[in-house]
Image 1 (tube, rainbow, N blue to C red):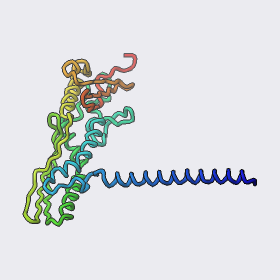
Image 2 (image 1 turned 90 degrees about the horizontal axis):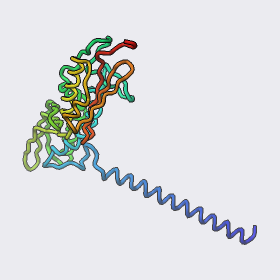
Image 3 (image 1 turned 180 degrees about the vertical axis):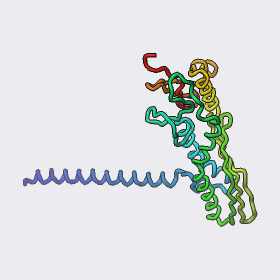
Image 4 (image 1 turned 90 degrees about the vertical axis):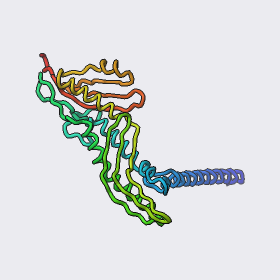
Length: 263
């Protein structure tokens, strides 16, 4: 090999080694940033949100994402976490809130107390997270050398105008230099599921009495509301109620007054 070729190969090797070094440095930076974000960004139940004088904020932070996710699932599935009698639409199992399997018959309401059913569904779905978050709160105080007494209580979910409120009848007593008692824990989410559920009940009433509801009527009286009615081959109707401002939605299925083919 000539001296020129040796110099050329030497330059190539140096260039390749330089590129490898740059890739290694970039990889180290990426891993470092990932680790940094992991420890800096607060996570549910982490001590990053713990304030000794404000345990209420800890519980809000710990539970709000779980409650929101549960509401999102329930709203897309007709009010249930795991629908039993449903129509699958766009890969989502949507519960029938009014149904008959006969043609030319009006449907029968399947959920007489839809609001209360939804409240119960949310309560059941989050109960494990409630226990975990209160235990995390207790441990956060203990880590700061507090004597802690936690008395478990009842969880209650309420759909209220423009909000969902989760109340926890727990009592927390902490002692160090002094004794403080905390109770009446609440987690509040801005969500209009109450309003959407009320509209759904009205649509269901029309389905059960006339076999049909007209979306235009609702959108005339509620300009911020979008109502869609999608008719399926078997006569099932999928109603989708969407708040135009928040994009919150509630959808459900109904089968009522179905005319047979050729009727």
